[in-house]
Image (cartoon, rainbow, N blue to C red; front, side):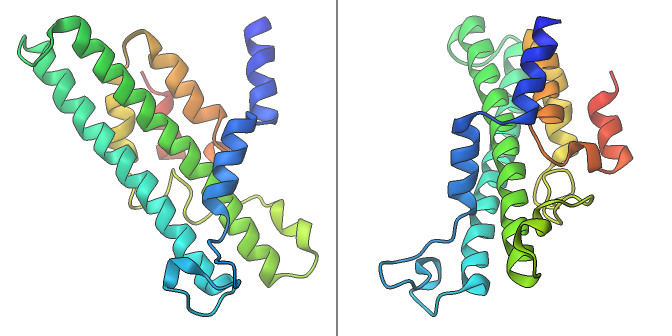
Length: 192
């Protein structure tokens, strides 16, 4: 019961660190003149800032996919008795990669949500009303084409060891869009 209470507090309000990093990733990059520095200092504004913010999501997706590939290869090589550094170093390396991969996905999803809410707020009247939606962002981590979600979930299940359930729960409860993800994606995570 205590564990579920702690988890529900996290779900209701992400940690200050997660919130701060996601907000930083979602914020437009501006120079001191107010121009968007992510586009070479061209005119500022939402359209220009959106490209730079979406590029940051691509970096997180690339990091998650790279961690996935390395964890998969390292886990396989150490399972076969090969690799470098011995079995203890292998498990630590693979676990670190899997945890980093999941962290990138959580940050991606949180930032995607903030970016889309900001874009909707600028397009709609009512400001705050745009934040509440029943649809996940179009670039939600669970539907983004640049995130190899099926492969990532398979690597978490295969390589995470004792932390497997905690990492899958992190994907479920620390992302904003899991509950709205397509059923087949939820099935990947929920199936044994």
